[in-house]
Image (cartoon, rainbow, N blue to C red; front, side, top):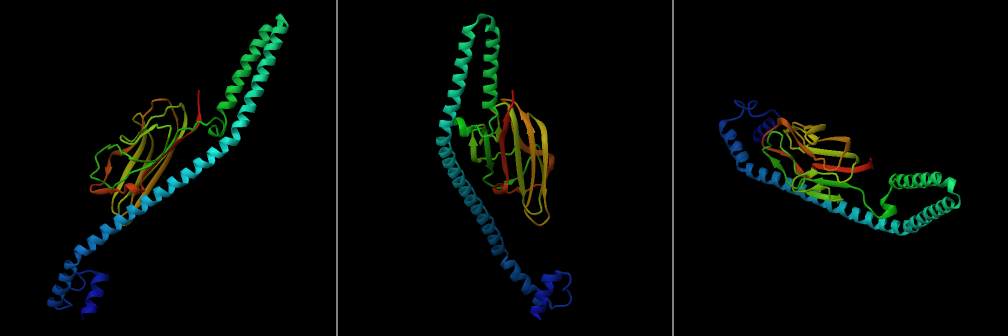
Length: 273
């Protein structure tokens, strides 16, 4: 009888078994469930703790990959530096030839001066348009990748989200204390954010530039952890303020954001004049 009661209770709920099982057994089983309720909560907390540990291990793994990538870039730099010197030598040689021809005949002075200026402009354009400029001159372009170190509860309207752990911050344009990305180079950037909500919670967030919305994100599910993502490609000026915030009042209360699975990233696609 007890086994039938437990199966029925698990499948159909308490209402389905009331009146079918003696009150003594009902009270006994319910007392057992209440007695072990604390253990169930402890297991849930342990699971959350394990998920955070897994997230930290993933972050450590990413850092190792980035370090290996830096080593490979340094090796490529050693190979590419002679190429840069050779290119500069050719440019200088062309410049010297141009100046020599300018001194040869006076009537061609204006023409040679204009040609020299155009040559320098073309050289700067080629240098600026290199697909992988850091492999050529050792300068790393702006790029950042971040996540939140903890769960976030009791969200406020239009709350600014602070992604306080930076896995990558080339150019130091991202501030881990405020969550604001401030470009130091004018250009077109790719910006990406993911917000993961706890089971039964939902929210809307947005990537904004100087208070203006670039894109919005929705995340929410009744029973599962739910990641929501979006990407923006935007022309940014030096000093612009880029951040992620909650969209107005569109959020639930309680533990809402799983920080370890919530990220904010961006990088310079190309420079503009």
